[in-house]
Amino acid sequence: MELIEEIKELKEYKENNDLTIAELARKIEADDTTVGRWLKGEVTPNFYSLHKVRNFLNDIKNSEEYAGLAAANPATGVIDSCQVRFLSKAQEKITSRTSTLKFPATR
Image 1 (tube, rainbow, N blue to C red):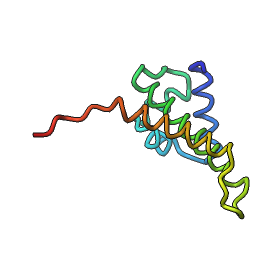
Image 2: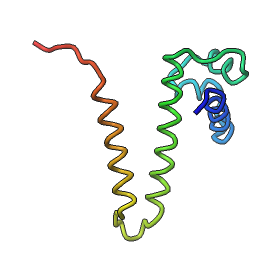
Image 3: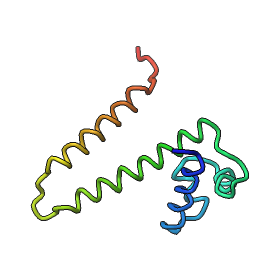
């Protein structure tokens, strides 16, 4: 996905959820002035901020997919093969993200 598309997605998310720039910035864990400048096209996110934006957008997409799967058959509570694949992929993403975290050595 290109940077311009990601910024458009951020704008859409902000508008669809009736958020202020400050509320959106808190969700991304970025400065609200900076996020406002991204949305206006004045500046582009640096590498670190872009990483946070991409993670945020991926989390939104994953939660929307999960909500759609859960709503498919709420009466039975049965997990079908599609849900199993989704949950497996979600677990893989979580595992890959947490495996890159560095923790200080304990004594």
